[in-house]
Image (cartoon, rainbow, N blue to C red; front, top):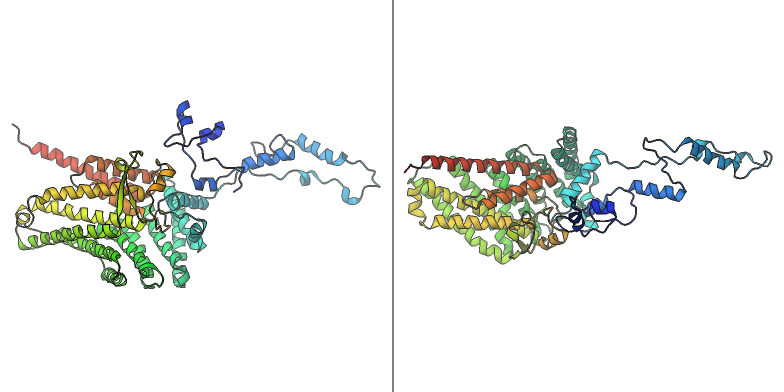
Length: 542
């Protein structure tokens, strides 16, 4: 791109009027004063990719001494008379006789002296638009975005694979927002090309390209989440890629001179697989537990080993939940009592893990004045690192599911639960669910920057120790938000806030997974309303 002078970060209205913009959120003071809708501000990437070709052309022609543009609106050159006068000036500038003039001084034809036509604007093709959309919406402007030039350059360490994946994800997001079928077909073709190039990258088995290989495979999973074919199909397809990334990383462990010898990277991938296995109701493979045990061996002497114990507890939750969903239970039977006892034991284990996690991954809760749609109840968490923020939400999500199951047992099997669970436990379960659900909502600014937030404020919410992965962790947050908003007995405010955030993510990024989850929330709410109406009708008339 070509630039023309210093870029302004002000809104389009102020730039057009050539006045100073104070860049306040959500609207600048100048627009409010004149009663105009403020169109918002350009981000850093938009400034980098701004196209000011037409301004440069105008400046160039001003320097050439021409008051008019060499290009008329129809795309033609300047008028014939102007060209003719220009040509005559060349021929009459230094009159000489034919004998004095050498052969090389013969006036040039008009076509050789006329200015070259310069296009007003350099248009991006579809693939470039897809990459621009990916970089702008999925790579930068996230809490876990790359910050330095070297970190961004790392995404292009393998240009062919990286660019194909970026174009595929970006085009898929744009196609969803625009409803453009041709763009969607191009996204699919880029995805197929990315699969092939990533396969070639994996076959190389070069240790120096390990991060590029992992990033490529995980980005392929992101494409599945963005394009979306229903939440369960989407996460199932994405999980296939995550399994591949785990296999790649597991094959090179232990890695010397890396914290926990590379176990943390494997654990991040394993935790991202819990939700797909839960949604698709698929049993965890034996290799999953083997990898967890191997990570525990690598982290035996460090307090962070509690993360492995959390992973084991969540894996156990998925196993017990599958049993509960596929077994015919009878109130008061030993098999029912035994299953309920195992969930009570699991709840006690999660309760103990909370203290251990806080010792290793402590955080603080803060309060401030922010847009209500962006920061739940004005509260936000300050985490020590991005990894810690994600671990805490995995913990909250899983423990909500445990207590949700206990509440269901208390309602459906009063005889069995009466022998095992104290009467006050139901109230305690509801209190635990509400507390953890609120924490998930409050944690959102640490995982995703809402467009209503001022960039200066978003820096407060970001944790250290970033992996420079952009929006890679966002799909898990969306599912955690859905669970928090649909948890039993939580205030309706939770549902509203989580639902609106999902819609905002979709409108900003075109991530079909966000839209699918919002539709699931709508179905959940409609179901609850029907149950309430049914209960009202069943009440006796007095």
